[in-house]
Amino acid sequence: MTNLQSSDLHRQLAAEQGAIDLAIVTVSDTRTAETDVNGHYLRGEITAAGHRVVAYHIIPDEVEAVEAVLEELLSSTARLILFNGGTGISPRDRTYDALSRRLEKSLPGFGELFRMLSYEQVGAAAMLSRATAGVYRNKVIFSTPGSPAAVQLAWEKLIAPELQHLAWELVR
Image (cartoon, rainbow, N blue to C red; front, side):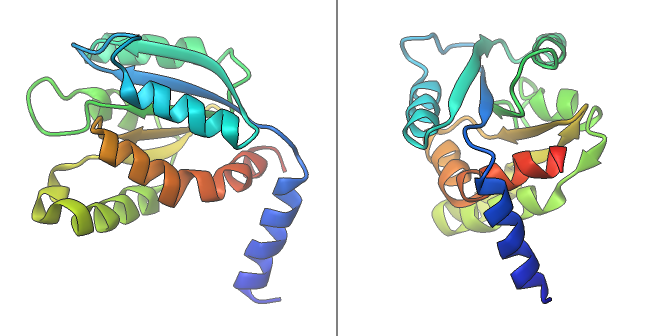
């Protein structure tokens, strides 16, 4: 069996598990539930795909807030946790710092692919992104920039196509 056939088989088996529970965390010092376009977008995409949003938070870009919400979500049914915001290099961008040290298994391909695809949209500025992903306590964690274009890119091109496969890998 080739790797392609194996990946196809995994996706087929993963599709049989049904709806997946996800959590959304917007990391922002300025967004509210009304102005969080990323939260609205992700909720719509997740539910349209037949999955469930089981938790939604807007938190300030503080290491302690990121760590606290991550710990809280560990007791939820969410199998994937989607953080958006705080991945740049400005002094206020702390999401990457809080999450990267917690990941037990990193998924470097996510950040690499995200920056490659982002380069097509924003050019060399893509190198400023510290988008990352990995597994922490049997949850898949994604951390993307907070721009709506970045969230849409990550969801449509990387996360959604492998969502069920990612969740299945945690329990197979």
